[in-house]
Image (cartoon, rainbow, N blue to C red; front, side):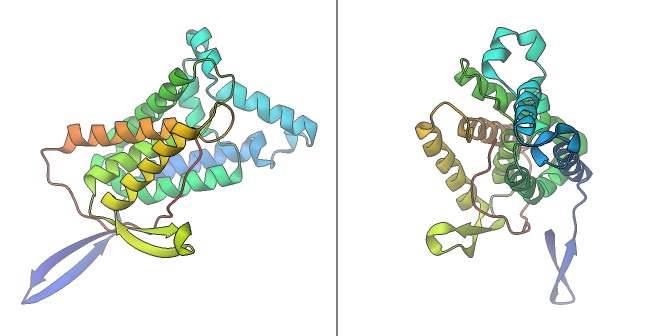
Length: 247
């Protein structure tokens, strides 16, 4: 939500306008649809149940996700996996967490960039974030899926474009009380957490913090290069939770 303030007849009038973000909404719908028909959701009876379902999930993630060892052993055959992996999620929590972040930060970022530019930004940064993780873990045979690399790029761009936007965060050490902080406080703090976690992460399944860092850096760098000569817009987006999102 964007608030525009103007003076009229000695009074300050506040007008509120809801931004239009068809690409953001379309990405959310597409990710939800892909998840619903895939084996991870448990909604598609075609994948069976029990051990058969688990086997189908492993095969599905291996086919459409990024497997670093396969990507560098057969670049031609696996070149598209960093793109397809952006639309695959491993669980309901994984999906809902990513889609919440995409909604909260993607709407205003899309409106600022424009639909075409935002779409290319999302896909390219997401692809490069997963590729960067794969390059740093080139011998890993673990599948990497999720939109977090692209969403982290949106967070980086949002930080540059809307540094004064106030974000509602839930802080565990304050008993999850909602606290409002400007984006220039919340998002660098989130990035710092990813940096610390990436240094402690071991190879294997889990959260690909390095992909978050690569995406965040790419997003901030792109926004700086593209919009540094323009006046940045102040915004007050919907509340967003503080936390980590899986790859």
